[in-house]
Amino acid sequence: MMKNIYLLAMTACSCLAFSQTTLTKAANDYLTGNSVNSKNLLGTPDNSSSGANTTFDNSALTDGTNVIAQVSTPTPADIATFPGTTVKFDDGNANLIYYKSSASQLEITGAVVSGATLNFIGDNGIFLKFPTSFGNTYTDTAKGTFTSTVASGLFKGTITTTADGTGLLLLGTKSYSNILRLKTVQTYNLYQSTDTNYLFAIGTLVSTFYTYYDNLNRYPLFTATTATISVPLLSINQTSNVAVGQASPTLATNAATVKNKVLVFPNPVIDELFFAGNFSNFDTLKVRSIDGKLLMIQPINLGKTNLSALPAGTYILQLSGKNEKDQTIQIIKK
Image 1 (spheres, one colour):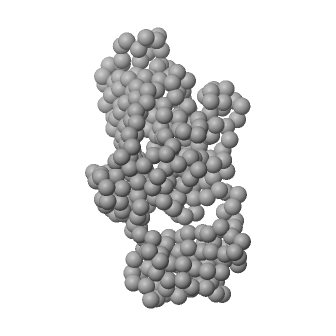
Image 2 (tube, one colour; image 1 turned 90 degrees about the horizontal axis):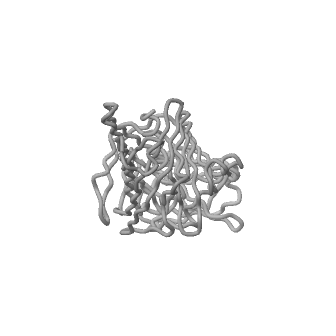
Image 3 (cartoon, rainbow, N blue to C red; image 1 turned 30 degrees about the vertical axis):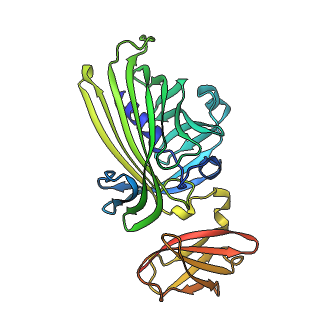
């Protein structure tokens, strides 16, 4: 039972998804119909760096299993169970998270993991305020009930979110600039279901997670979570770590529009780069450095372009057309 509760709280926070250097409702709120291709990452995340203009070095992490997260509209039954819910998030690992989104903030209303439920019915926890930028910090209270097949009880505590870093993220073989890093700590005391005055805690749950956003993607590039549950009466003291990264950050888009997106191959590329998908309405290609500097402008001709003049590194391709919204794709040049 306690293992399920620990997973619930960890997942409720680690699945959150946003991305811009300044996080806003327009750019970073959940959109029904969105899907995000991600990977469970292997290795030990390094979240030790903080502050402005730093390097977050997680180049040692390697790819694990693929997962696809989905955002959908909650059903009437969902809303009845978790009052106020406006969006439902399936993280791709068989976990469901429920949120209430408003003009100024995003709140956690509930989570369902492995047959157990964490319900924030007593006090939704504010996870993110709009806007959030470097240096912002805020704390909110949260409480509710937990249920599982073997036991039930109450929880009460706080969630503190701090935008504590900016700079460059190295993730596996890729690098991302204009990063905003959020550190979120949730601390809950656990109580028996009869202890409605929250007088005698039987255990604690502490979860710390780091989420990295850039200015090109709606959803997070990388999330690393550490959670510890301690219940002395049951001799439980467990810690777990989870790391998830986007598999194709520039393709984290509304599922209804994926068919209109352009793909490129090979990536990494040596000389010629080829386009696939619906690229006929794009006529101009701009190549930018990872920090946004314009390096070259070329016409899109016959579904390919030659990048042999570029030195090895990471670049952003910007495709433009008269009747198309610009599309950006990140590539690696060998």
